[in-house]
Length: 153
Image (cartoon, rainbow, N blue to C red; front, top):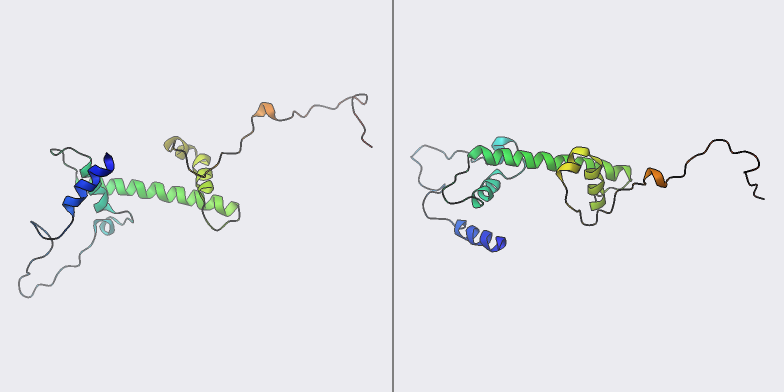
């Protein structure tokens, strides 16, 4: 299964030593440069290196993944997450609650037209969107004649 495949691939990647690596001796007088992650270089919160590793896992042995593909993918995921969290925070604020619940995420996604078309998943604990069909609502009729009205005592 997929989980077994990922565990098998990840077990090969762990550990220090082997070829490559960031260790080694420096020439005298040179200080080590500050190591900066690719997420920090791109100004993102999402892990670019981890996403790049997962992208490579999904491809065949001959195919390659460009370095900017992971940055682009991380930026998209971060943007969508921030958008959903902002809308869910607004929904929780409208309901005068300080904690975002699955119900608030559901209301946020279904309330936004573009997110609703993008995310077709069922959200556990999200409930349903309040909606009453027009035909079920009582119609307000025009002035009824006096003979038709009932008086309640």
